[in-house]
Image (cartoon, rainbow over all chains, first blue to last red; front, side, top):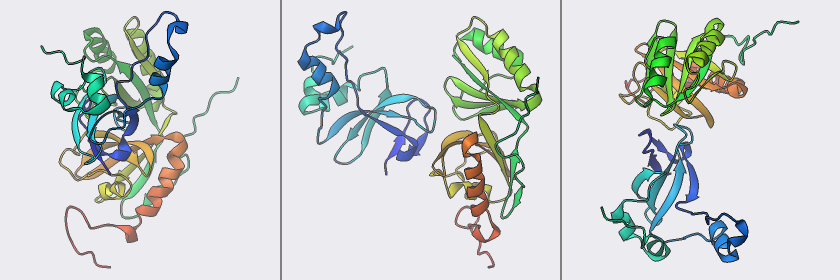
Length: 114
Length: 202
């Protein structure tokens, strides 16, 4: 059983108080005309998911608490939560750098240094 | 035209007197209030109608007289008041909040309230909730939504000494929650596992 902390209301609860919302940072192809979306882009949006061994980024909901969605970075091997961050944000830069495989590919052009 | 007659989810339930006392609260009005706590107009309008400032801190409540505001989420509160005044108060909020991005709805029928009273009330709840209710934050006025007996529920610690806890569950689950509490609050099922360790005479 995982112990999770909601970054919105700060509550610490066990896994059953939360609802896992699957992989984070899925972007719907943007277009004015749906016909312009390629089959490949639509396929990737709907079905293609990262499945890393190690650092993973997920959506969670404080289901039996404040009801808000948030993001979490979790290690799929140790189940350790590395960070919680807002549903509106990308992960902390150090975690984007630590990402491997397809996540590293996804984040490589998203790390903006301030 | 016939007058609507209110019948609570636990109407007629006879209070249980086991290791703790369990009773139904049927005369409480509830208003679901949503809005942006950072919006000064929203804060001012609600304060004017309710006479209290909404709790901005998570899991806190504010009480004055007959009105209590329970924190539900960063933008949501449950206002409780005597049932007869619920509709009036909801109307007052709706009028005062006109033009402000917000929501105030009388939801008095949505939930049922069960009051647990007596030493050991927290331990009875802990049999069905994965939460340490004996932790120091569960003191007077603390509110927490949680999973209780697999239900979406909310507890309001009215008083921690003596222990008085109001358990809010959705109305359709009221009978189940009641039966659950009836079974787990018998004198024979009292736990002495937490807090004050003492060997109970059997």
